[in-house]
Structure formats: C-alpha cells, structure tokens
Amino acid sequence: KAGVTQTPRYLIKTRGQQVTLSCSPISGHRSVSWYQQTPGQGLQFLFEYFSETQRNKGNFPGRFSGRQFSNSRSEMNVSTLELGDSALYLCASSGGGANEKLFFGSGTQLSVL
Amino acid sequence: AQSVTQPDIHITVSEGASLELRCNYSYGATPYLFWYVQSPGQGLQLLLKYFSGDTLVQGIKGFEAEFKRSQSSFNLRKPSVHWSDAAEYFCAVGAVSGSARQLTFGSGTQLTVLP
Image 1 (cartoon, chains in turn red, green):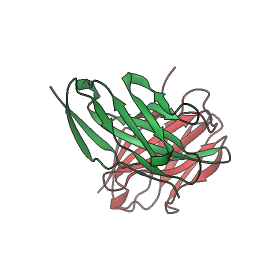
Image 2: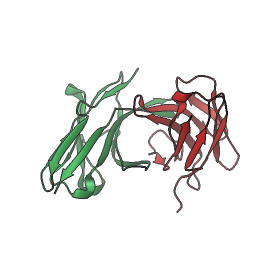
Image 3: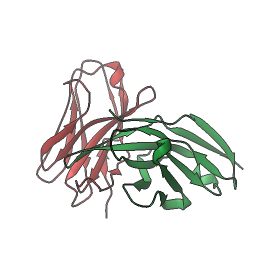
Image 4: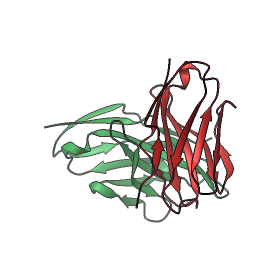
C-alpha cells in the first residue's frame, strides 16, 4: 500500500508569490490534515479536510487555504508569501475517525526568499 | 486549550543504555496521547498512542509509554537504545471535536546515540 505522497519535495519562492502544495493520501483514507513545521514554532496544525469539507482549522491567517477533491487528494495554497512562511509542510491522512492514527508524508520544504 | 511540554530539548545516551523522554500535557478532558519520531528530512512516524484502558502502552521498535493522569505525564521509554534510534521525538495530544481531530505537538526532543 503506497504511503502519503507530497509534491513537490522542495520549493523555492520569493516574497509576494503564491504557492500550491499537493498531498495524495493513502488509498481509502478520507481525511487529510496539514501541519506547518518550523524551528521556531515547531509543529502547528493548519487544517483538516474530510470528504471535501474543511472540518477543523488552526490559527493561521486567511492567506493559508486548502481544498480536497473527490478522490481525497488535497491541495494547500499560500498566497502573498512572507519570509516567515518558510517551513516544512506536512500532510497526514487517516480514515477520519477519532481513534484512527495519522500517517504522515515526507513533507514539502518551502523556502521563501 | 491543550498544550504539550517536552522539557528536554536534547538528550544524549550511549548505545545499549536505557532511555526516558519526558512529556507533560495540559488538557481539560481525557486526552488522546501520541509519540511520534522524525528522522532528518522525513515525515513523522507513529511510535505509540494512548486512548484509554491500560496506562502502559507498547509501541513499535521496542518503545513503551506510561500514562499517569495524576502527573499529567506520558513519558516514553526504551530499555536498550540502538544507534538507529537517533532522531527527534515528538509527544502530541489530540483534541477531538465531534469527529474531527487535531494534534498539538510538543517542541520535540532530539536524541543522540553514542557508540
């Protein structure tokens, strides 16, 4: 069974640009969550999607958005990039139930110059 | 709001020695608790989880953790560390709202294993 796949693996952007990151969950998983990891703030929850609906959101500005498609693949978009958005963005998938564990991808390393 | 504290930023142990990584949490209800491990440039791998029941939880790679409600702790232990255990370890508490879930992570403990 293939794991969680995130693309691209690395990304370099400049301030003011926008970026889209992609996450393909494990087959059969309907929940996709996104986390931001930085040296200063650690791991922080961005949002969770289940069956194409956002059902939970962390404390991030509106520049951070996401969506989920009917095949459960998810995209995360960051508009008007700032230097502080440089981070490892991790995606995790699960079946969606409260007791189910999260399977994480290897992440997308975003550098904003 | 829930929070997780991992008081040890960096721990160094010799191969074959025992290991204990500390984790304290703050949560208003019965917590869902997790330990994850992250190797450089990789995502997070679940070592073990606690939802309810037996307070001593067995995980993968020979790790175990004990939930102590009175101390709000969920410390990770391993009786004999291997060089391949060198990585960063994260404790997390899961907040459940309806059927949704989000994890709050601690700041991590970097483990170095000496030969």
